[in-house]
Image (cartoon, rainbow, N blue to C red; front, side):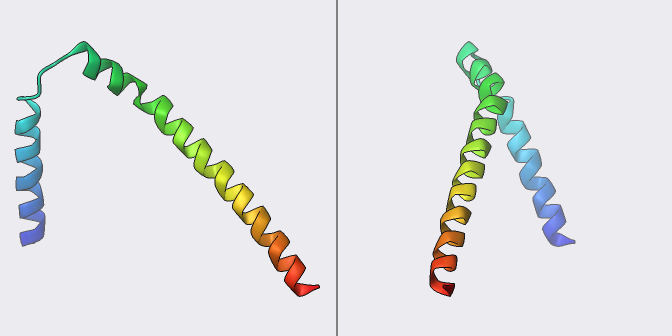
Length: 65
């Protein structure tokens, strides 16, 4: 229960600090681009995992034969 209270206190402090952040066009543009950037990161990781798992499967097949 104490952890929950401390977490809520931390969140409240962070939200209060958010009010102090200056509003700017650059910040707004970055926030708007975030979903696209995250999609690119996820796509990169997905392709990397596919390539890695393919290489791993090929290596295992080579060891098993």
